[in-house]
Image 1: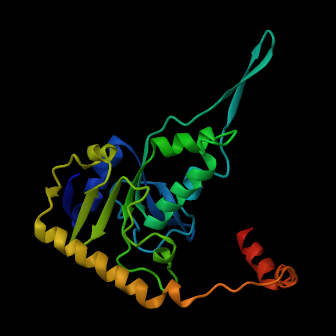
Image 2: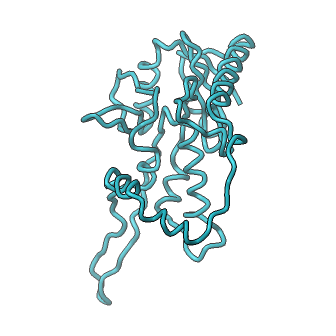
Image 3: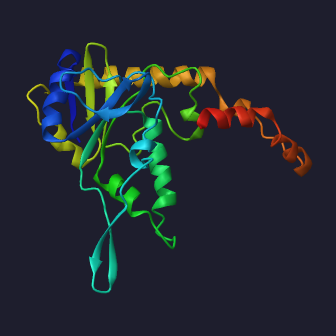
Length: 242
């Protein structure tokens, strides 16, 4: 797979061109809530901290048309309505992309009696371009559960922020058409070395604030478990969710 370099000042022009060739979504803030939304030409996407609404809301929307019915001599005939769009989501966090892959194990389990065709259609048709976490948050722990700030699982491409430039890595063949742009240059060995340095620094930062080996799991009795359900923290958490 190819690796490309894009000057950061050219990112809006690159995304504007990509938006004309695809259904492009990027992270942006509206009404105080950061989420993925259709890209507006010329904008600089907010690819820093994670979105308030995760990528899951893109694949599992709150509302969607699932069936349409039409009259028939024998009664109403219902037909499933599957999405025909081919979206590109830019600025995805590695943890979000990996979460969708884990969701697929539930919704698209080949051994299950039923699979979710709506979720499956979106996974099949959506191209995910990740944005690596060169500055993870103090509460991040992706490395403790098998992921990483620059994890590639579930992604079709990954962007590494090098400061003045962006390194764009192709991870799947279906991502290749995205990078047909005169604004891109082939990445050099120095670019790749710089990217490796960014990745290593990010991993070292995470390992310094959270080490899963420092925690031990203690067995508790069923009676103790029952008392946990009565803690007020659950009601407070539920209110935030609602």
